[in-house]
Length: 229
Image (cartoon, rainbow, N blue to C red; front, side):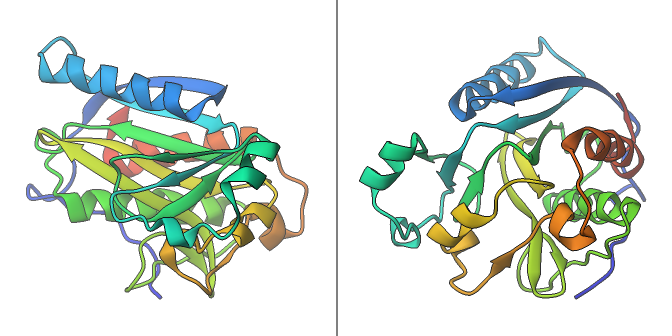
């Protein structure tokens, strides 16, 4: 596993970009997806030049990415219905993951070409944001060469799943702060049968809320991607 580094674009680094911050406490997953698609449409139509960063937490939901296998869901749909947890298939990359309050979700909707960022550098930048955020709270997180995300030893602290439309990114990252980890045992997270998920609270042994973690994460989005929020 590797320590994080700042991503380098084709021009030697990301270009400084204006970015509108949309921050919410909690939002239904499908509503957030609709919001992303509306922003993408406005950018495609030339109605919105600036980039957008959405920060929020979701109500409990499992999501399946483009390569997601239904077999990686290990509990019945009936049980999830009883618990009020939906399962949604979406266009991001990756397999299955879980979102819930206590997990910070960031959706950067960035014009990658204007920012001088290739997709690989963009993904590395998202990992870097999570690694730096973890470090602010005394947790040493790393990259894994074979599996994207932020890792603390063999435990996964943050996950990634992106999509790109006409050179503009959407979807993004999920960083575990103080959510219950039990629902991750109902899936093969990211399609990996033996992966162990963790959280910032578990790794620090401290009671943390998402508010101070969000604040730090916003600062790292500024630094890593050159955003004027």
